[in-house]
Image (cartoon, rainbow, N blue to C red; front, side):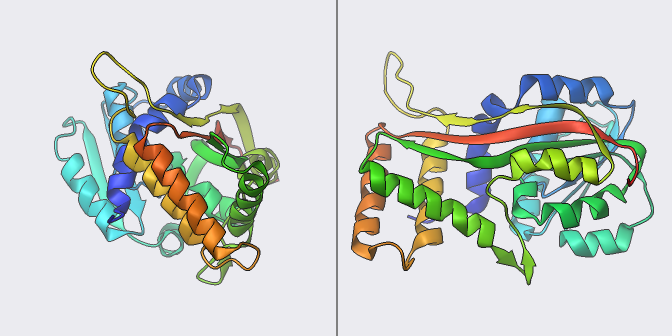
Length: 286
């Protein structure tokens, strides 16, 4: 099948809606200034903006959303065409570090949002650059930061399942993008230290696990919304990450992938990923 990243991001919205930590989310609401200037990095197709508007966190704001994939920004323009008139939206397809170099030192944003994004970065190297964009005392909201647990049930072969999980996480730890380290399979727990070292005050933190399973109703049994596609994309991501890995038997791994796909088709696969959310203030470098 054709794997489409904007569709994956759209399918992920209902998964994220359930996962986002309610305490952290409400702490964000309590600390949003009136008429905030918000910067979202790695904004994808704009689902966080939709969420903030739908839940009435913002009705008047200057919202800048950037993403390095032009197809994501094009989809966001379509999805966000009917925002309330009080939301001044600026969407831009741009590399994060190019954006930082262009904007660094201006400190024009009250709020910085990174949703399901920081675990793709070299966090300790990137945080100081990000915080340089915030006004003194500015608020940050960093959600869905992966934290070292991937669960697929039912088991196929417990030993093989564990090996695939370990190797999959290892690919995150070893990932390089543009010559830079760009991943950490335990970024959630490490953010406690990284944030404090970057001069941030954590106001709230909590778990935001993805939990996806088929939910039968009166007429049908299946995954809600487009979450079947979400699962198909996750399994394909694992396949691509580990294809031809020297520590895996290729035929055995392809059979494992085929069985996981069959479990999705049968509505049997349960997927859980452990993540953490954070909200806080940048109070200055230590």
